[in-house]
Amino acid sequence: MKGIFAIYKPKGPTSNDIVQSIKRITGGEKVGHAGTLDPLAEGVLVVGVGREATKKLGIEVKKEKEYLAKIKLGETSATDDEEGEKTSVSDRKPALSEIKEAVKKFIGKIKQIPPIYSAIKVSGKEAYKFARKGEKPVLLEREAEIKEIEILEYEWPYLELRAVTGPGVYVRALARDIGKELGTGAYLAALKRTRVGDFTEKESLSLVQLEKLVKSDATINCSTEVQKYNNMNINFDEFKKIEMKVARVLEAERVEGSEKLLKLKVDLGEPEPRQILAGVGKVYLPEEMVGREIIVVANLEPRMMMGLESQGMLLAANDGGPVLLKPDREVPPGSAIS
Image (cartoon, rainbow, N blue to C red; front, top):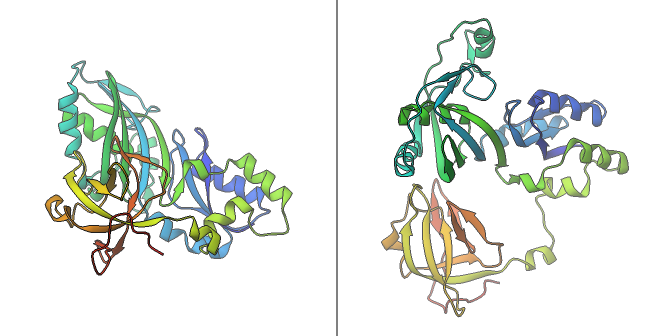
């Protein structure tokens, strides 16, 4: 069994523990992963099985990631998570409005110092090895990108967030730094990674499922479930299920808390306009969008983003940034793309 697919890592084992389990299940194949999850974290761990697959994991490492984080305010932790020794800082209860303002400061390209309990190399040695000996390694600031932060719930002392990040972001450090900004201290109480690139929690296999698949179908390299993530081709019947249509933008505004998301109200030739969230706000101003004809996928399941429902997906080319697709002459809203 070879290829790149997603495993659901439970709380407890290290990412390397998961890799070793997969190596055992697959009969000693070469196995790697595309981004560590701490032992106390759970969620999507993208793995590669086989020499060719592991070579391609570098591409997956660079893809954006999505997390659900539970942060405890009022205390700090030596490890920036639930595991470390706690120090009480403050029992002041900041208002939600104050938290919103603090969180906004961490959206975009930021400077972040990794936790000392991390695998970052210092003088050729992992930082956590120094920390375990009671030493404090000096870690340099690194540039990181946090694309979205959505506050899901706040009830003192717990703050729950959804965050979409670029590669190399430490959510433990984000929790710590939000606490510093608020003056309350904070640490990461729980973390779930729900997505890496196109691999989602829903599509991830447990180790038990993986073992059953390998045992039941040893004559092929991948199970049907796994193949669909490794095979880039779709047949014509699958393609026909995608409904692409022309839409006209009626209204556009920025989504609070996001640098790139615009909230669009679009006419698709239906009785009521639809709301679509589009990540084009770094290139296109809201006022530039109004009146444009755009191409959208009209039959996607609605998706919640930043607390708002998106009822479709805008299509754009990528040329270092989004470039909108449009018909070469005006056509009625709702016109099908075929």
